[in-house]
Image (cartoon, rainbow, N blue to C red; front, side):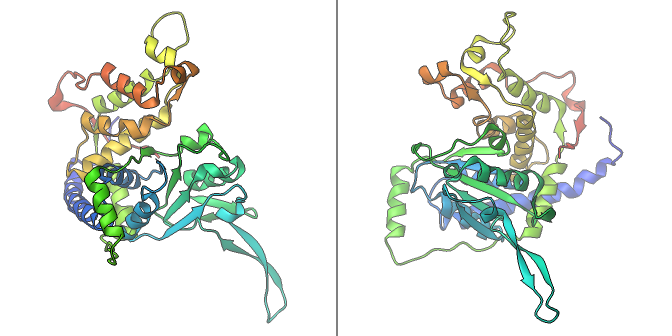
Length: 358
């Protein structure tokens, strides 16, 4: 793919990358004043935001998932809204509704749209799997098109817009499994684990004192939008994109007698990752490169984001459940089967292109 843009256009991007790298360190320090540990979780959330994606947080109750999302929104200077998903939640409770309003002067009546809680920069969908599929689907249009439709009218959402949903993995009674179409809309699935012993000690020490630490704002919404555009501008070498594609294609079972696919995938995977997974791998790798102060993407960046990108897009089989094989085990196998170094004819003149993903 050729480009009409001159090469010097990359130079100001490099300066912006340096500024973002410094800002990310400030964000981490501010978050550390409120959140103890969970550094990898915070990094994944920040990567998803900068890449313009959404994230699903999976973890048991009491791990400060809600506090983490709220603090991240405050640090980035973004408006925050929390929606508690319950079995009786209706779609209009999320998107908003139209009401009849009367003009006291003229007596005329007209419909007026009352915006719902989805009209915020950062929307926390708490326990998203506790509401019926009809209500879950109300988020689909907002997540994909950044707009909602009510009364035949389209209402655009403020930019930037992120949906960060939480899900409890241990309670299955009274829950509704997220459909694959909606799971695929989430760029990352981030696993929130228990804190370490020292981290738990610090959590208890902080939360049982009279001090209430608060994070200060580092960026604003205009900065975040500009940084999202910067991530899109980062060039990616062809062999790095090929590496991401190979990971996704290798996750798909062939179900034929030719034996072209590995037995492990055919045995344990029912459905593999689709093309959207490849897009998420490249965008997530771009965001990681920028946070690291680099204006190029390496294969190591792809490997660093492969777990949150693929784990919810790989549907395992009944045999995998019987053998206790989980999606992360499949990702382990994919990384072992895909060499980290992909040879190219001439690394010095590797073809570079700019991603045009939407």
